[in-house]
Length: 170
Image (cartoon, rainbow, N blue to C red; front, side, top):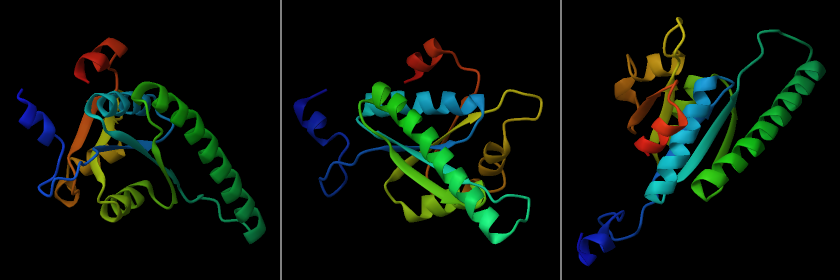
């Protein structure tokens, strides 16, 4: 690679450097950790950054206002604690702290809204579930009937990749 091509790598038409942002949707699945690790490794190797989206979904139980407010506060605190832990892991792998988004609503709707609102997000990274129930609702929706509605590339990694396989891919 010549020095000239090196200088222009990662720059937009206007010449300003663009940082690739890899968005991962945080949930409690095992495969999410694979998506997270993949995104962090890709960010490290490309000079990019990881962004995390944690969506607090509405409770199915209808309760009184004060109880609902308490549940919402507890959910928010749990989300913040989970994201703090994951942020440390991402920082160790990628060398930078992630961008964190916490939203309330339905996961798919909030993901699509964030993608519309944040033009800096470059890639959505999801991991496919490996169980009999299929790849998962987000993967099924976003690579199926809504594939044309997503403005960024969607990278779907197998949820059962090993550390060695992830390292080889990144």
